[in-house]
Image (cartoon, rainbow over all chains, first blue to last red; front, side, top):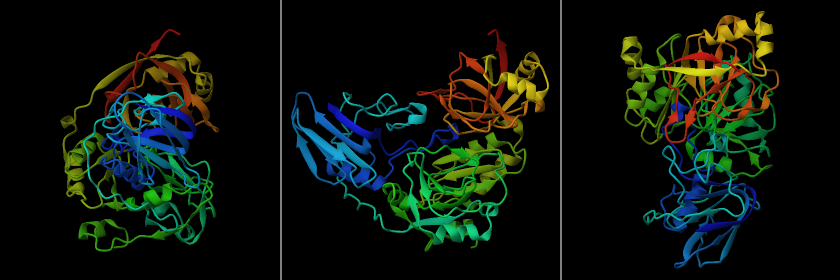
Length: 284
Length: 199
């Protein structure tokens, strides 16, 4: 058993996500920072998407019960063999989000194809809710996987975006504003989206009132012009126009940045992409 | 035409009045499509950027040319207690009595036009035009679960307690809009009727 001794901020069980349910309105879920979840899991010889604790804040856990030591690690990659009664603290400190993984994974029920917590629907994880002091989570028996841990994301790197798909709902200056400006991460960011503060992006016309499909990484522009980049628990449809979309490989570096951290965007072009992809990209 | 939506999704504009369910079913059946979402004007597929699917446009064209009878949709009858806190205001905006507003809402033949916003939340077309009122100017911080609400040309049922800007006209009874083991009760293209229950 892993017992929660104390929590500050928000701690939830998260895993690799719940793909294939978006047509039912279920967002893809998954970790805010896939690289960091994979690092914590690799340190305890789990597969990259095994269920672990994601914490925005700090959590202290204790190992309880008979048997030998339990192998526990955070995304710093250092495994700790903890005997019953031993504790480990993982704190976000200067980071936005940290992970704590256990050899064999956290044994919470698999709901609709995933073990991660979706707070909006009180679904998955531990009773669909944030972890709190006194919780006890069983340890699973996921098979050992040897994998090289990925590097942590580079928090100073520009975040690459594909322009669109709603360029027709902006004037020509909007994309230039997004790509040329310095933004910072707003403290109101959550698993639904990273809110940015900085120069407002001007839109053309008003919202149509008709919702369209959304994806993680979509840079939505609400009426006030402050971008919101959709996160793993985003609504699957939305009405705000999307000026650009963060490429999948850069979702982690964006979501790892704490409140106040700088964000710059750069335009991504599909170097070496297949002709099919080129055809799908406006301007090619 | 496929529009790039990042490097891991494509979006396609659909013709007005297209049969969304047939498009959704065909797209979900394509190899390498991870997720497919169809709304009234767009279809979306997501995929691994290293392995994009093929035949997305052809699948949509086939779905649009197939006869509508090929699509299997279900009909749901949902009992509603018309006790919503915005019912009187909706009736006043429509220029009818509360009893007439209830009859208009319950008399509609609705079709699921899109799903999203929350897991299992269905955008229902078929609302009597007299009941079309805009979203509330400031959303409520908490709309109770199973609230039956209207906004613009849509009606809908909140599966969970949530912040929301729709006008609440009632409460669905004995209806699980979303179930942790079975998923969403309503699917794209399903038909929905409401029957009033005494409050």
